[in-house]
Image 1 (cartoon, one colour):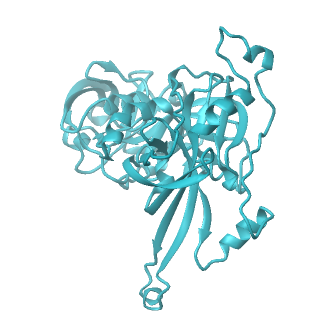
Image 2 (cartoon, one colour):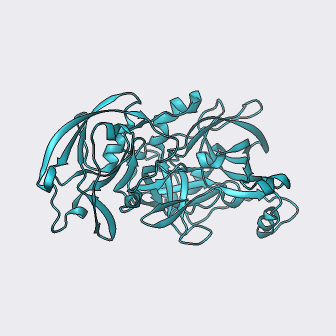
Image 3 (cartoon, rainbow, N blue to C red):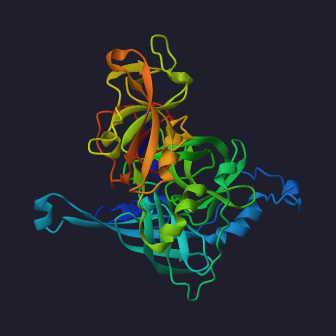
Length: 430
C-alpha cells in the first residue's frame, strides 16, 4: 500500500488463495463457478482509435483488436506461492504459524530466450513462481533472476523448450503525452488476457515502491486496471510497451475507479541489462528528503534565493548527505495545506547539471554509481536567518538501503503529488 496526497494506493496483485481461510471458495464463488476455473477473454470499453485510422499503412497506429491480436500472446499469467510466518509462538506450537497464499499477476515477455518482466510485489517472498502461457495451455516453473524493490521491478526466466514466445516491443515512455490512447492487457481477478482501453491521464506522478522509496515519472491512466493486472503492459497505439501496470487508487473500494499507475518502461530499460545478469540492482544513495521548490512555495513572508530547486526537508543520519554537511529544514510551516520545513539547503546542481525539482535530483543521483563522488551546488541559509550563501559540497555516494529510513520529515513526503521525494537513488529519489 502506498500514498499520494494522503490518498490510499494499492499494489495490484490478486490474492487467489489463503490456506485454511476459505478464501479460495469465496473468490471462485464470486466468479460463478465452484468446480472449474473459467478462462475468459474480455474486451472492456470501446476502441479509442477508429479502424480507418488504424489501417493507415504509414502511421503504424492500430485499433484495439489489432493490438490485442498482436500483443496478447506476449502477456503471461504469473502465480507466486508465498509462505507467511506468524510472529506468535503460540500459533507456531499449535502448527498454525505458517500459511501459504497464492498471489497472481501478469508478466511481459521481452525476449525469446525466456525473459519475462513483471512487478517485484507480484513475486516478493515467493517460494515458487509459475508462468502460464495461454497460447500453449501450459504452465512452467520460473526463476526470479533479478530484482529492484525500489522500482518494483523483477525479471523472471522460464525454460523455452516446447514454447514459442512472442516478445513485446518496448517503446519510449519519454515520448508519451497526456491524452494519447493506451491499452492494458493482463489478468485482473484471474480473468486471463483481458484488454482494457483508455488514455494517458497525467504524467510525472509519484507512487511508493514496496520498500517505501518513491517511484516518480509514473504514468497515470484511466484504462481500467484491477488486482491481477500488476506486471502487465500498458501499450501505446502502436502496440509498444510504455509502462508496467503497478498500482491503483481505490478510494476505499475494492476495484478500479479510473485512476491507475504504470511504471515507465524507460525506467525498466535502464536496468534490464543488470537485472538479466541476476541479483539485486545496486543503486546510488545520497540520503535526503526533498521537496520541489516552485511557484507553489512562493508565499508572503517566505523568501528563497531561487525559484527552482530541491528544498531539503530532512537528512538521514550517517548518510553521504550528512557527511557532506547538507542540512534539512528546522522550521515547519503550512503551505497549501501541506507541512513544509523551511530553513534547509536548496540543491540546484549536481556535477554541473541543473536541478530544478526533486525529480531532477533523483535522476542525477540515479545516473551515478555507489562509491562515486559528486559535486552538489546549493544555497545554504546564513546563520541568524539572514539570506543564503551559494556553496558547493562533495558527497561520496553509497549503496541505497533495502528499506527507506525512518525520519522525522516523513510527513512532508506526499505533500505534493509530483514534488516530494526521498533519499538517494532511483527516479524521484535524491
